[in-house]
Image (tube, one colour):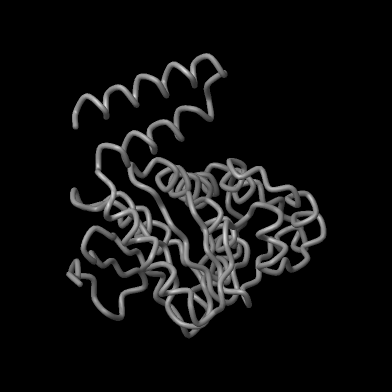
Length: 249
């Protein structure tokens, strides 16, 4: 493994392991609650994909993937007893979080979330924003924001490409979704025994690492563009990308 130089105790660590760029939420003592600074660090880490990387992995240190945002420093709390303005909330919270979700969607290689323990709020959205999401069988997912009177529309936007069947239920009830139900709803793609999560991630990394970079890039470009295209445009794009990769071999 080649370490990118992130400090071991940094709240977000990055590692380059062969062709895998690993981004690690690293606050295990609090379930990897994400601060505003960490949102910026995550964005920088995702955007710093090395040229040789064929896969980006998002994971959390410790027992939980991510229990959500750390509200101790949340911009919406305001300062000195003053409620923040809409402009301040947009600049300090919604825009950075939306930019992070967008950056994850636009990574030019596959993205893989490895989810253990609790994935709540921001954590659920972070996992679901990846191309592939694998969870340990004990993992749980929840969007609790409505309990505090806040609509989790940012998280819903991140999850929308998956169009999960139970999204309204998850949002309105604030209930906890098991890994098995999350798999059925399309929030995640696979469940494995908790002790096998890291090994399954390594297996997927080896599979993708053996694939030619041109084909990986073509599939990712197609997935990104096809979401916005009609059937005829999707077919034309697919044919063009296939021909381009085949002619380069």
